[in-house]
Length: 120
Image (cartoon, rainbow, N blue to C red; front, side, top):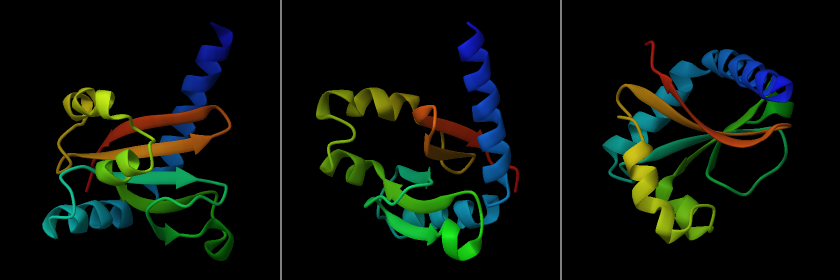
């Protein structure tokens, strides 16, 4: 139970940190939607090098805590991060991208999807 509370606190801290990038993240998600690339934009926040999505922020170059990439459900499927049997479940869970940002966060507590309400 104690570890779960720590994990929730860490996720809340991560969400707070990522709020600093909300304008950029929203713009990236909107571009994915407007250019009909996908109906399911996913913003990937990470600290290690990964080959997923289009880089938006490099934490080393920008001296921030997070690197951020823009991706999609389709890319997650093509790279086998979401298996075909889970796609419908993911779509049901996915929140309206006009009102929420879908974040895939790779941190020391593992990998989680977070849906954060847009404030802008």
